[in-house]
Image (cartoon, rainbow, N blue to C red; front, side):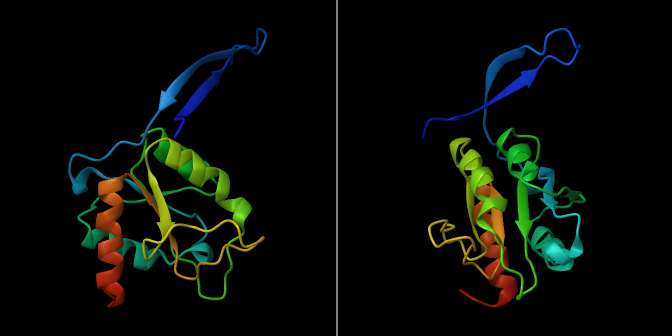
Length: 157
């Protein structure tokens, strides 16, 4: 891994100079109750009720942030939130360009991005991301807890 970095921009309108690079990394919550998870704004992009059940089963009590686009990955990578869960309806097919850049930023920042069974996402199969069970992104320990909750709630090992 090379690491993940953020750069600010000069917002005072006097030249648009970039500010210095700043290393970013995921932040493992001290306790599950401190975790903040994110989900899509659009309910058709994810089963919000199932995400809430997973969060509660994992000990997360804070209401979710609802954001769309790959910004969710950046927010976790910068340590500003703890997790992203996405559980689309069965017929929906994720496009690789909606997740590839965010997944690499998360990985470089020390996070884990997998499908909802804990398998690595495979971006090598063309335009469609071949996972029909969801996406989970989080720091390593929280990620393990979320995957265990998903498996328990779905009745699989």
